[in-house]
Amino acid sequence: MENIGNVIMASESNLKAIESDIKKTGKPSDETLVQANEILEQLNTQVDGISDNFMSSAINEIIDLYKKILAEYK
Image (cartoon, rainbow, N blue to C red):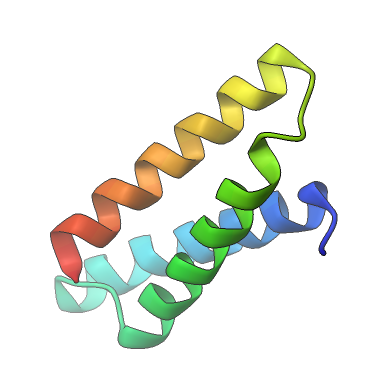
């Protein structure tokens, strides 16, 4: 299982790619959506193991953002 820090860094990169795709084409590419789904799964798996409330809250906000993106563009 990946370190949560690595997953968060991957999510930052993925969200920037999604933003760039939307600016260029009006929607995320299939590749960035697949990555988004994979990152969402990893975050969901790991968030329950986080004991720090601030970190857990921040991860839940990222999860909510991914859910909105995937709901809108899938």
